[in-house]
Amino acid sequence: MKYADFFLTALTLILALSGVKTAKANPDIKDGSIKVLLNYKTNCNLQSLSREITKDNGLKFNVKCGDKTFYPDGLIVLCPIRDVDVSCKIMTKPKSFKYLNLIYGPMSKRVHAFDEKEEK
Image (cartoon, rainbow, N blue to C red):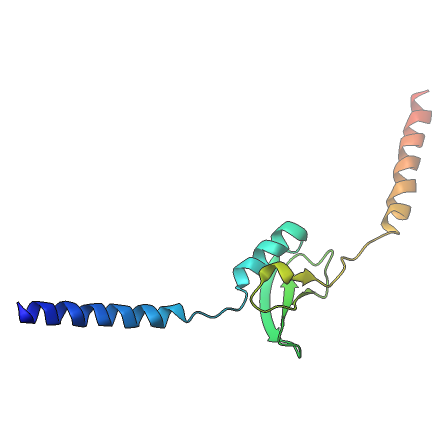
C-alpha cells in the first residue's frame, strides 16, 4: 500500500509539473489571427507573413500578398498591444485606380452608342 501511495504521489507531481510547463505559453498574437483579419478586411491573398517587435514593445507584421492588385508592395499590420489581437490595425491603404473608370467608362459608352446607331 505504501508503494501505491508513493507511486500515485509521484505521478501526480510529474503531471502537475508538466502542466506548469505548458501553462507558460507565449502571449504574443498568433499568425492565425492576423490571417483571419486579412481575410475579412482585405483582398490580399496571403503569400508570406513576417513579424517584428516595435520600439514600443508592440508587434508589426509585414505581409506579402499573392494578389498584387490592391497591395502591390504588400501591407503592414500594426498591433500596439502584443497579446491583444483586437488592437491590430491594417496601416496600408489599398491602391485605388481612379483613372481606370476614365479609360473604360467612355470606351464602353462609345461602343454602346455606336451599336445603337447601327440598329436604327
